[in-house]
Image (cartoon, helix red, strand yellow):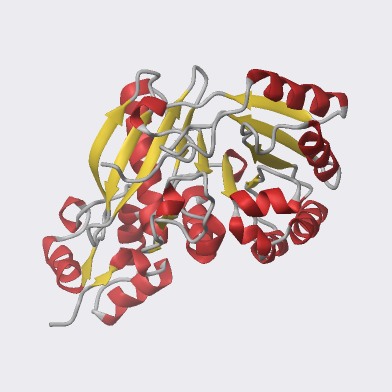
Length: 345
């Protein structure tokens, strides 16, 4: 028996064509498209403005491969972590981070990860596959629903900082963002979306050429090549010089400031030489630095640096006119903090 196609892989035009070919009106395609995206329908049965006969026809031809939130954990600080089951029974994790003024969705783009950062729990899982645009979209819808239910406000921001390297799933991530920002999708402003990458120069250039409107964050952690390679081995292939050039190109094309995500570890990157290298790297294009608290992943090698080392970073960056924020981790007690997503559930 022929496998049914996932209906959300079709464009609106293709849906319209399906109906015309089946002796129906083209506008039925618009109605179904609205149900699938704006209303995030899980089944054809809920499409109440479409006849039963038409719904049966859809049921016979297509499936809606919808995600299911398999398990939800709530942290003592309000953070929510979802274990999300995909249609093929693989699991990814996504996180809702609330503050007084906003709620942020941290979404995954791959099952596992393509890269090999040694400090990250996700990197220890092999990459099973890329997520489809609808699977990324569904994570956002689920978190928006939780935000409304538990915090009485719609989701305000999205960060691609969950499992996976977004730029290694480039086309699907961009298609998902298109749907999230489209008026006939979730209608969110691209300025409220940040794509965080470990730094894939070719894809950063491609994004710049496509003049994307979302923000870019780079998981940097060292501006000295041999140190960065020791903690992020792919840096041997995508060197800091290549990364720097691609980021200069990004800024020239988009005029959008870059955020550097940076963890200071004890005995790894906690000296004056390290912070001076970071200052020099920040000067190539307008940028700001988020110093992120480290969340251990049962590994003695990586330990959070002393508060004195972090204060030195802040002081030197500020003296050089670079905006710096120290980010406290959220959701540590449920393994929902940066670098901890590893499907322990």
